[in-house]
Length: 88
Length: 174
Image 1: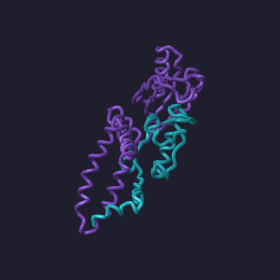
Image 2 (image 1 turned 180 degrees about the vertical axis):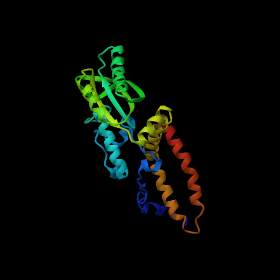
Image 3 (image 1 turned 45 degrees about the horizontal axis):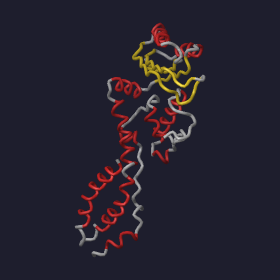
Image 4 (image 1 turned 30 degrees about the horizontal axis):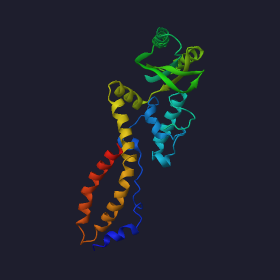
């Protein structure tokens, strides 16, 4: 039994370690996404300034639509860039 | 009654007084049209994310107002469009959550609470993962061995080691 320590690397430790994605708006009860809060919206955008897909952010469809709308409004007001490199 | 919000960017080349009078002119215009002004937020001078009209910064103003119907916004937008001092504007109708959000923000409930949350999540999600990785290899098999009845000891022994080591790793990072 003491030799169990040798066995532990036979299985890939990364398997089963994936965290389940969730919608942070549903979880924390955030109902409104402010387009003026550019710092917050940056978390839904990649370093080129593109809106991240739902499959990566884990947002529910309802809030992903709101996020996308808010990001686009922020872009219009020059709070966020339309195109860049090395945003983060 | 519907709540609206108009955000606009004033040309920063104007003098401080001129900027204030421009913003005042629009709030007066709204009042004249029977709108009830809820709040005027001076967001101040900010650098733009991209140049507009060869300017790299702008003075942001946000006026929240209540109005019976939206007909008046057409006149407001036309005036904003014709005004050379205004670089950009956006009129937005607030839903009930937006009204509540703005109210809470004014009372200082949201601006502080919301941002740290988002950042904390990122930090806890992103940064400590790297130093933790070698420990996970140790802890994961330990969890697997727990179903075996003869080995209850290694699992509790591995658990207290986890919180201590990330702390040490953080100190090393700093």
